Length: 452
Image 1 (cartoon, rainbow, N blue to C red):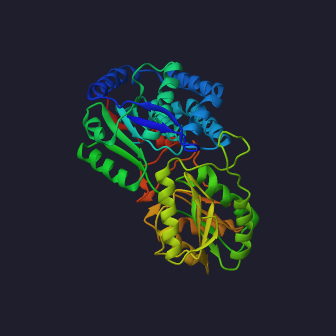
Image 2 (cartoon, rainbow, N blue to C red; image 1 turned 90 degrees about the vertical axis):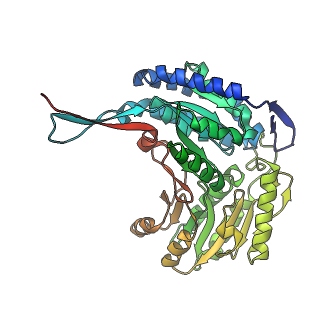
Image 3 (tube, rainbow, N blue to C red; image 1 turned 30 degrees about the vertical axis):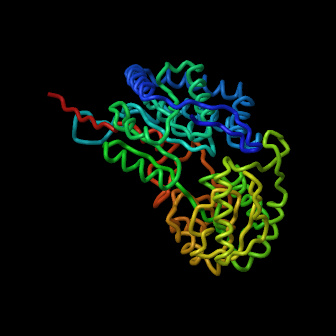
C-alpha cells in the first residue's frame, strides 16, 4: 500500500494498493495490444489527440494544480505553471512531430536511400515527485508521438497524479493501454524490463537508482535514458548585472522549495563583487513567504517528504561543521526547511560535493574565470550551468569549457520543448525534448534501394 501524505500538514490524502503480479501481466499484455494499433496510427491522428490533451490540461488546470500541491507541496502558482508548461509542450509536438519524424533523404550512389524513424514498443518510465506532471509529459509526449506506448511507474508519494495522468490521456481519446500507470514498488521493475513489449526505459531520479536501472536495461539489451542528479554552477563574474543575477539566482535556487534538478546550487562568485551580489541575493531570499501552498500569496512551501527535509538538515549541519558559514536560514520545522545561504563553501564540503535537493545556496569565492571553470567542473555531476557576464564572447568561450549538458548565459536555467535537455558524467545520458527527444526511442532504420 502506498500512502499519499500532504507535506504541509501531514494529513493522509489517499492510500493506493499495489498492483499484483496478475495486474502487472494484464497491463503488459494491454500495452502490447495497444502498440500493435498505435504504431500504425497516422501522425496526424496522434497529433489531433495530443491537442485534446492540451485542451483538457487547460480546462482543468486548477484541479490538476491542486492535486500537485496537495501531494508534494508545490506552491499553487508554480503548480498552475507546471500544468500550462505541459499544455505548451503538447502544442509544440502536435505542430512539429510530423517534421521531426519525416524520412531523411541520403545522398548516395544508390537509386534511392533514406532513413525512416519507427516506434519500438513500450517505454517504461520511472519518474520522480518534484515535477509530477511535467516530468511525465516531457518524456511521454515525444515517445507517444513517435508511435510508442508507455508504462508509468511514478514516485510512491504521487500516485494520485499518476492515475490522473492516465485518465487525461484516455479522456482525450487515446485507446486503453497506450498510457498506463503502474502502482508498483522497485522490486517489480526487473520483470517489467524483461518483458518483450518493453523496448526502452527512461528514469529521472537519483544516481543510485539510475545506476541500477541502467544495469537492468543493459542486461536485457534495452535502450535507456537517464536524467540524474545535478549540482549546477551559477557563475557570477565581475562584470555581471548583479541585481539581475541575484534575482534570477533566487528564482533558480528557491523555486519548488529548491527541489529542482536543473537549478543553481553552487554559486561561484568573483571576489570583486561577492559582497554586493550577496547583499542583493540575501534580500531576494528574505522576501520569500512561507505558508499553506494552496494560498496564492505564498512563494515557498514545504519539502515533499519529511525524510527529505531531515536529510537536507543533516547535509547543512555537516557542511557547517566542515567550515561553511551560515549567512541566512538553516532551520527545519517538520517538512519545511528555511531558505538558506551558506558562505565559504569549498571542495571537500558536503554543500559543494553533493547535490543539495532543497532551498540551500552554497557560495564559493572566485579569483578569475579560469578558477570558475575549474571549480564548476570539479563535480561528478554535469547537468547544466549558468554564466553571468556582460561580455557574450567571453561567455561563449567559457561555455565550451564547462562539462555540462546545457549552459544558460544571463538567464534562468530551464527546460523547454524547443531545446534538448540532459546531462553528462554522473548526471546521466540521453536527451529529452525537441527533435532529439522524439528520436530517443525509435528505430532509426536505413533503407537503400537499387533498380533492377
